[in-house]
Image (cartoon, rainbow, N blue to C red; front, side, top):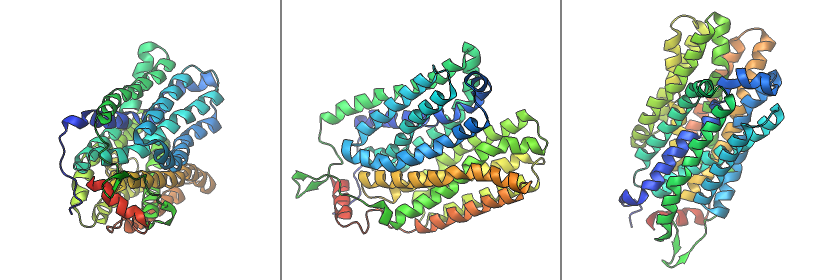
Length: 419
């Protein structure tokens, strides 16, 4: 019996496709829309250096916590209910933090907002696997691209929105609307789904629905490998988002140019997001693609350290193209699982531990710089991140799946694909 899923008509899955794309577009808005507005938010709410640093660390820390929690929620509630809960949390957090008057409340509500988006991070890969098992590469390419667009769009338009309304609070609240729209196509899709049996429900003996079998990611080399890979990759990305403008400013570039370099770095996630999901599934050994993007990271790091004020845009382009490793990590959440439940467990575990590891990188980067009085040791840390990333890449290079070695998980995962 072939385990390759038959190609299905798109007509019955339009709501799911729109819902996935819109969710991906909104996932980074809460993270990257606030920093450009801190010049207005900070004096009014009372942000200082400590609270600003705490805000910068909030996203990876909350993503880590809810990355580990969400697979259990998926097991209890199902993918769609977890998605709805994630959107409601994100919308509520964004709307409420737009009206608070102190920094503590703003941080707490930001954590609630990020909890919703952290759940959304985990839910997206298994949703793609559930509704589009026959078009994994194309749909993954679309949603990873929308992640890149959202990462660029929010900081690009946050300040103009604030200027247009003469109020930073309106700009903060506006991004909640983008999240709320996600509920519309999913509502349509859920109505369609109730009219027919769930396509991903595994059957035992062709008759009895079976609940998802427990998968223990702590005992899976694949899960550990993807978590290590994602930690090494995300650590570099968070360092660039946090330290690229101040580093370039200290080297002699003006503030506007330094900010433009960060925008260039962010938008370069777009072309690699389009390429990776279409290219990597065709490779027998995905580590080949990892090595290509690692070479870009290395060129960017070296150029930025050795010659930061000459050919700066070139070094930023190299580092920006290195972000293809993040797209590979998202793709592997489906390529290294057999079932939607396995994909959810793998996504939650790898993002939970991966973001936890990456969260400390920007902080250590600054601490090491202050302790040594220069940037050499801090840039050496990026080399360590590359070694960590390549170690994880080696662990996920083979065809092994997270369900392997999990008893009945593999068999029921295969049944899920057939049914």
